[in-house]
Image (tube, rainbow, N blue to C red; front, side, top):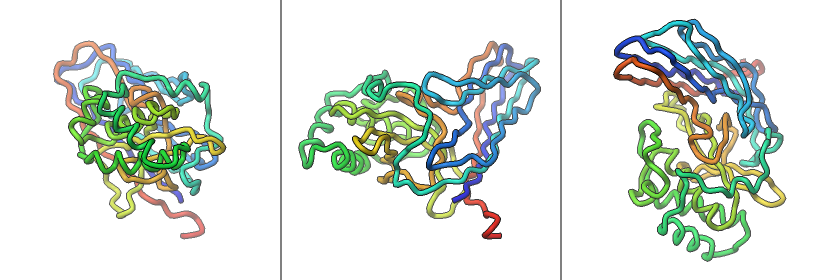
Length: 275
């Protein structure tokens, strides 16, 4: 499947912002399940855009404007060819040992409720990782209601689990916290998802989890949609939690009140043979 993405993140400042630095994890890499045909990041103001790699193996761009500005648009456009791998991620850049992803993080600390929930899922059937993860996928999907809205680091897995609802980031964090508690390495993944209903407009990018399965490797699980990831997903960045894979994080001096708006279009593109 060929997926086209047009993603704009629009910042407006009350006053010109100085010392602005934007850290962008917005560039996917090739692996066995996806091939990046073209990808471009275009800031709306002049500045320095430098590329590097973080400790997780994600492509990271640092953007610094040349002058203070009261508005900034980060525009991402690209096309990616994806293949059906039934969620199995092979050939991705791996910079850390698998067991690193058993480490807890502030956003994925398992509360007593999550611990009991995870143990209940593990003890409900075959304790092998793969069937256990599929039960966990269904259990988290059944426990959590998806609500739209922007991602926020103010909500961790424990709060989201107690509220029984959250954005995709929150639901993925609950899955990750539960998986780690029963001894299965898991991590957060950010990216894009082409909707099955054909609707191309999205409020924001998507987030899901990957867990380690013996003899298979890393497998993507999306508890929002209760499925393993498919060819409808573009994998962009991974980390212990959202903070390690956030599409954009930044800092600035001054500027007053900030207003953020996002437009995102994810759709299937026509290939040459289809045309």
